Amino acid sequence: MGATATAIRTIPVELSSHPYPVLIGTGALENLGEQIRNQGIKASTKVLVVTNPVVNEHYGATALSSLEAAGFNTSLLVIEAGEDQKTPATVAQIHDAAFARKLERGSLIVALGGGVVGDMAGFAAATWLRGIAVVQVPTTLLAMVDASIGGKTGVNHPGGKNLIGAFHQPRLVLIDPNTLATLPEREFRAGMAEVIKYGVIGDPELFTELEAAGERLASMASLPAELLQSVLERSAAAKAKVVAADEREGGLRAILNYGHTLGHVVEALCGYGTYLHGEAVAIGMVAAGELALELGLWSPADQARQRAVITAAGLPVRWPDLDPSAVLECLQGDKKVRDGTVRFVLPTSLGTVEIRSDVTSEQVLAALARCGG
Image 1: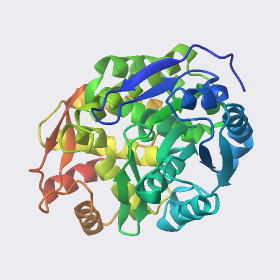
Image 2: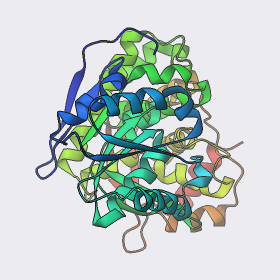
Image 3: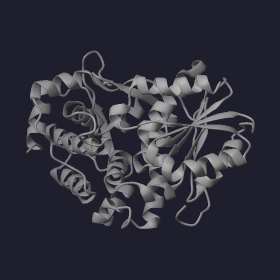
């Protein structure tokens, strides 16, 4: 399985109605069944593990054997899970498997994979029998630090990303850094974009740690183990804190969308899969920083530091050549639009952001023109 097992760290997500733990520990996947039992789920429960072919090849047997050893009635569904597969049709495959395996209201779905698997399996759990339990077992850096925590589930619509979905909190999130050993470098770098996001929106100490690591951020092989542990714990804690304060994105939680509003435009207009989600978020953060400069919200020095860290992590920073009218139209389809007005999360310093609804189309296009090429 890789590195020697370590003690499991617990990060609580302190929701008033559905509190749950995020467990982080090297080798933790081997104790998946035991940890689910610890959440009060009885041994005879039917469990459907949803994963993709690559993750199944490396980690499916470990997950299944752990669940079976704990007494669960376990079955497996392997789905294609690229961003282009994140559709209602794929969720229907999970529903079909739930029907075939006679999942009941007390049954459980385990999402073993990256953010796409987690989003789709979570949405299937939210909608099967009006909601059954889900456990998130993320195997990519992006899913570990972001997608698996907070209960946002869903799929894409041709008109935009994640327009179809539901809030459905997991019973447990289990993170095993060992699973990153088989993650492609490009995927690892994409996950680092979300980590950088946490530094910019609220954790300046984390940002400084990342800045000091320099180009070691770009590779799992060169990232010090203690920094990886710090990244996982600080990112999970940051996400947990915001989610606990604003479970359904009524206010504060919107800051987690830093880089995403413009990043989703890149994904939608360039075609899903052209850029990985984290790559699009990286471009979106640079663009949001440029927009903050346009509005006089932060300094050129802070924008230069943000750009330098994103570049050091091996992520793209240049806005692609997109038709301006298509960009503005796509922004209007964003989930965060209120009364026809796009809300942007914009930085005011490295560690603080604010939400602005007074940004004009001219300001957006001027900022994007400066970070294109």
